[in-house]
Image (tube, rainbow, N blue to C red):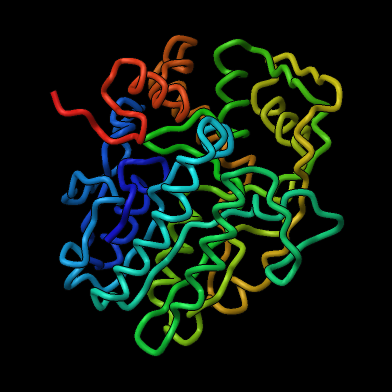
Length: 338
């Protein structure tokens, strides 16, 4: 069972698992159906249209593994209602892991984030102190803390701290740094940075995240149970200005400019040694240059213009604001049925 299969990562994960021979059952509440950019996958799973907060033990009977990624999915979205974010991303995720164990599920793979490192000096790894700066990151850290004790001989939770995702996905997101800057460059021929671009961010392509999930599911349980893995590669620790410069090299007609030092002080460089040691054969197949080339090819194919780039379906907060403003979602982000 994969939660969030109609999201940015879920829409590329489900085909990856199916190609490897796994039977995939999906759960998604359908918030982001408006965000379909192109027809780029050969498989979409049978989907249970449910909010994960309403899943029961009976819904999980017979499931061998759960991959959980259905949360409020980035920092701005997490900050719009911190209490609700905590109830979904922390309490809701811990509840899902708890009922999964009760239902006899053997594996639970949780999508955590390198954002838990916050502001860090030097290079951090899975044993480094964490310093979450946002409600989103705080919830990721608390789920790790509260789900890890559930591990035993029959239940193996694993926590994947993904670097910042990038790359093309049919269920596209333009609120991720590389995707956003590439879209701006394509539609406006400008890369206007609002900061000086000095903070460090590790990046990882959506398809490399999908491969890491598949390899985690296929690894011996004793190798991954209760473990935390940073997902990415050492070579893809970039300063934000480097990301902008890579896009500028691929699209030289785009004017590049930088601003002053911004208020977002998150900066961290990450070591990815452990995932390569424990999951032999895992290497990232994508880097920023290759990902930018992929995005520009997609933009050309779909004739991306400013209206499409800025449409609400590709920015999580804008889409949820629309659904709430039009009364389709209530204050707890449950659907209001007509």
